[in-house]
Image 1 (cartoon, rainbow, N blue to C red):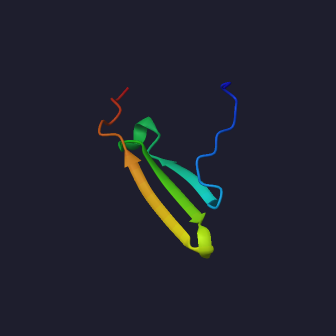
Image 2 (cartoon, rainbow, N blue to C red; image 1 turned 45 degrees about the horizontal axis):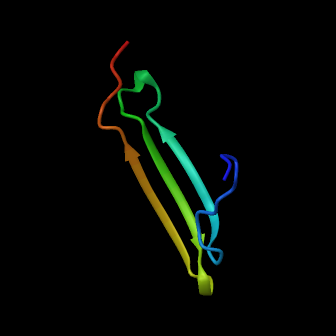
Length: 65
């Protein structure tokens, strides 16, 4: 298996309709830890649609310059 070989991350009957990453708090001067919001919509068997959203953040604020 090579490093550039494609490997599916979902079952064949699951279609990823939307995958979006929103990064906020990335500026050193905004005084907020960096956050990444992940938005995902999948369509499964029998046309069941699932919408997921989650946000992850660092526990450490970047030090001032």
